[in-house]
Length: 229
Image (cartoon, rainbow, N blue to C red; front, side, top):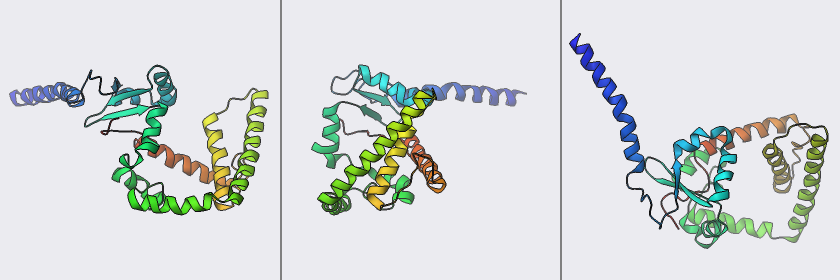
């Protein structure tokens, strides 16, 4: 009986101690209150608690603070909607914000060593090759026609659903519009996902959505974990 009691006390102590250790791990060494770092909005657990309305929650936060931090166990994760920060990350100092090995590990099965998965010299080489192709007048003119035509189809779809008082997932509609447009421009293939006339393309879109969701769950947001501005 005494042994069982000791084991019970030990288990109870561990259960009480574990949350304390988690809190210490999350908040230690994160420069809390420092003006050199973006303000702390919460921990990653806050984002998990809002997972069913994550984008709405982030939009609400961004309306008050354009750049905030969420604390994780080993790092701070920075979320920003500030145009100057975005320009700094994606243009001015782009080389300092590589995708990293974790991103490549997650996307390799789908993207291989393509431009959206690699960094450094391999990225620069593919970007240079693509820039020649996408700078041609013929492709620019063709792209404009495709995007405008599909935008008109998107507008009709939204208008019809609105007139019928139907609910709509605007994010899903934009995704379908983007896939239809990009595949026609890039591969010369009309998916017709937006109008729902291509069953095979619809299955592909669902698989693509699943893949994208998994990537988001893995934390593939635009972030600057350790290299703060």
